[in-house]
Length: 81
Image 1 (tube, rainbow, N blue to C red):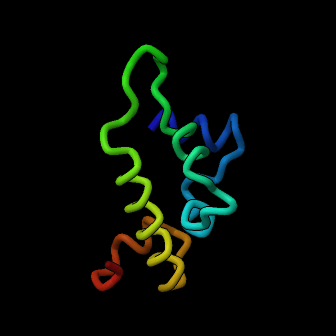
Image 2: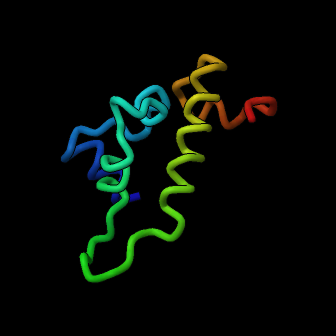
């Protein structure tokens, strides 16, 4: 959660906005990799990061399709995914 807070506050990256992270032009993979980087450069990156990014984009597009940029509200909808 600290990583998300830093991305939002310090880097001004709207990583919780589905319309942002589903758009590969506005939010390239390299930016998502930057947000979810390890605190210790000597450690390995998150396992299966490319696959997780693909899933994140798919979910973001679905959230945008149902007209919800609010993940908390959309997660309570049973027919979203």
